[in-house]
Length: 226
Image (cartoon, rainbow, N blue to C red; front, side, top):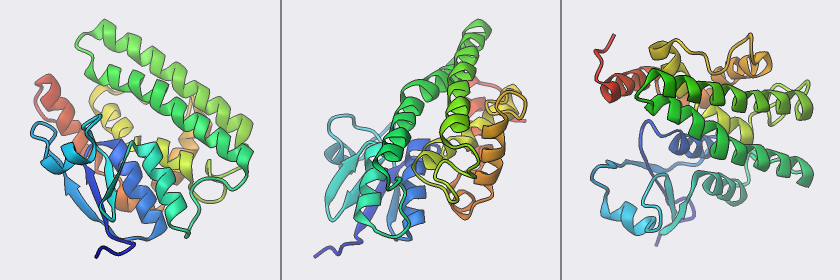
């Protein structure tokens, strides 16, 4: 019989969505089994656990699968009581959820469109749209989180995990394309936040090395690794 901490996470090393789940589990201090998936040859377990989208991450708890990273993080927060991830206040919780959804619906698609772009014009267009979307997060930090070290207050929380899970991708893109997605000149609040986040124990433990992203980008575009 599986115990309450019988957890298995299906993920991919470079998936920021899987990384945010591992960060949430790390914050909670719960142990779990990590299973690396090959998305070019998806396992039967993944296809069975997420038959609708057939993608990672999937958290399997006591044999029951939970899909979609934002939902998984909320589930983890509700299931394990140590270290609250979502704000306790209903209004603050709604704000965090709004901006988390904004990041997934607007910021990341534009950013990844820039990464996948095959022409300079396409990349520059997506870059402009990415900067505009990130600018909205900078304004949100100034409006809703002024004077706080993190979106979660004194310690990292829900929105910190959502945005922070992509920082290694931002760094990889900076190294390859010499483009700073979060910069001290355009987004100084987020730049300072990113530095603080990168120094947290959970970031150091769970965030993949940006070198892996650099390798992926060189392979993606058929360029030699620097």
